[in-house]
Length: 81
Image (cartoon, rainbow, N blue to C red):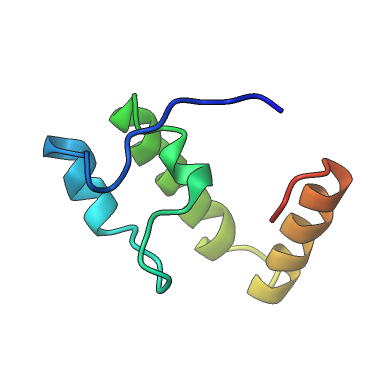
């Protein structure tokens, strides 16, 4: 499995720390799928925008169906969702 260097929540500063502050999950941290962008905060910002459009934007596909599609795609890619 590939290894990607990330900046932890505790080590983040500036723009990255600001973005992280809005992405803290109930378990107390930022999901790894988002932290992979930590070396390029602009890509993190873009990832969050795309995610919000795909999951919450106007579409004939209802939110639960979108989640199911994401789960199936992750399983097909052998990715822990």
